Amino acid sequence: HTSPPQSLTALHALHPLRPQEAATAHPSIEHLATHAASFIQHPGSTAMAQGQAARATREAVPPVSRVAIIGGGISGLAAAKQMAAYDPVVFEATPSVGGVWKHCVYRTTRLQTPRPDYEFSDYSWKNRDDPSFPTHTEIVDYLEGYADEFDLWRYISFGSKVVDIKFLGGAEAGFTELWSGTGKAPLRGKPMWEVGIVTGDSNTVQYYKFEFVVMCTGKYGDVPRMPVFPPGKGPEVFKGTVMHSLDYCKLSEEETVELMRGKKVVVVGYKKSAIDLANECAQANQGEGGQACTMLVRTLHWVVPSYSIWGLPFFLFYSTRFSQLFYERPNQGLFRSLLCRLMSPLRSGVSKFIESYLSWKLPLGKYGLTPDHPFVEDYASCQMAILPEGFFDMADRGLVRFQRASAGWCFSENGVVLDDGTKVEADLVFLATGFEGKDKLREVLPKPFRDLVVGKSSMMPLYRGTIHPLIPNMAFVGFVESVSNLHTSELRCRWLSGLLEGRFELPSVKAMMGHVAGEADAMRRTTRFYRRHCISTYSIHDSDGMCADLGSATLRKGNWIAELFAPYNNKDYKEQ
Image (tube, rainbow, N blue to C red; front, side):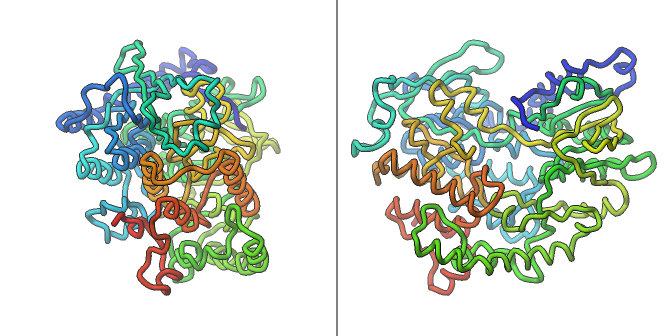
């Protein structure tokens, strides 16, 4: 079920409320759509905007600048800090920093990694030793503290939405020649891109020229991935309410409880956002009058209750240099290929060891939720989800139910119908079906570049997870996943800063394309879910490559025992 994205308003156009329903439905689709469109006017957002107004944010954008950064989330802040020498302009469409952590989370959303594994190399959590996973509000506070610490506010232009990007190089310049083979750094004193911005309620597009553009718009939020259905089997026939998780994020806590309380709810999906949404639905429906929430599970994935497996810390299995030695890497030589083949039984054994614990600890068999693929395939594709506390307790109490479905499910007047004819009644259907992050890029990039965003493997073909070999003087940060996306983005921004400074040269376009193809091949050999650009099983090797380009040490520990068996985190990459 994939199709061009539709908005909640589009769904409403397919299924307007009938007069009698408008009088009884509460809250109505009109109310939710209006609310979603104006969520930045909420008191919390207003307070945020007022708090940031007290800081010295950017008041004016020069007509010509060196570096533009689009997006004020984690990647955008990391890019601003690393490229401060160029007085970058950060265009942020909303009135606050934080990206998805501010505008695309549920009230109960927490980070999936411990604090020490999700922090900037030069800015620690104040409560770093707190074992609990941070809430989304704690993460936003942490990011604001980072912006305070390094005075990043002065680079940010809030309320500035990028609607158009024009290439100034000209087709005759030869795209491939602009990136490499010249021995020159990308910043040459000549604007290469023109960025169109709208601010506030204005429809006027203002253009600014830049030598280099860093796209930090991310993979999540903004553009929902919507299922597509045959005529007469989509949301237009459903008498209830249909909402994508993106629009649910924009509701207040009171509105979410009011929306779900006493309703028969179906949540489509079984990844982290779907699980969190079902958990919130179960919480809202406790007590008299509550209804069960049904999860429509299309593809099973392994879920994890904590980072402890049979009493052993999880990092021992995948996050040390020794453990990653036995997994596929991009562009590996013959010796490593033979080693990986010989170590296949060991990799399988580690995966089965973890699966045995999860099958013992969680009632996966009871609810028919045991995947038929190895755990490592989910880990290698960054699809492992950490369960919210008490999730299966809710299921045991009958507040969460699970219904397997395939691609043939559809809507009916009173709910959804599975491909085997099973009917599931519903008043409210949530589509936790993900996002189309690449479509955000396609909307603003000019031709021919918009057609180059996705490669043959459906991964973005990015060298070092940052540079598209055929899109000159533009970088993409935040489109590669790992166990710690913050570390992945920060190190890439440091690498990018080194490139702009001329500390190293890019290889030829052909070599970069070959490297990108090697990453896609490594993913294909490791997991069936290879369409995601995830580096979790070779993250240390990935960091080694960027450190080598920068002329920095690749071995970051104090002794060989720690080097082999201690986990790597962002503090190991703190600049000296």
